[in-house]
Length: 172
Image (cartoon, rainbow, N blue to C red; front, side):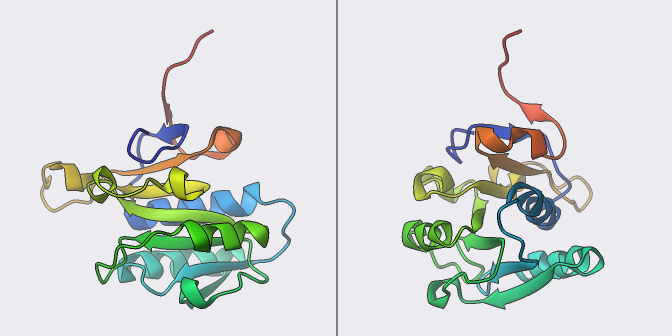
């Protein structure tokens, strides 16, 4: 939670692409005002993530739109996923893109590298609604080839929609 800047996090999902698919479905449930079935994916997203998103989106009627986020007006989509750093290694501040998405009523998901988050702005600081990623970057052993546990973190307002278990402190 400290690295993503989000209020809550789950423990855990299968891998980063699966976390992206869960975040896509969570965003669809959460964005009740937006009736679109289009999910925007930045073209600089890891190919394995795009493949799993395509697999999960088709049977539930979600249209995946893979485009450059920087040149997008976010029209007619319910949510957008942005990889940070991108699959090509590009590190950039997503604040402007996320603000533009919010103006259009679009929820934003940042697929982030938790090791990179020790040096760059957190998804929460950039205004993201959901952050996902893989825990292997912190040296989790390979475990006979993987996969590695993934996380999904979000703002408190979406806590009832988070898949899996929630990590945190509670008071009864």
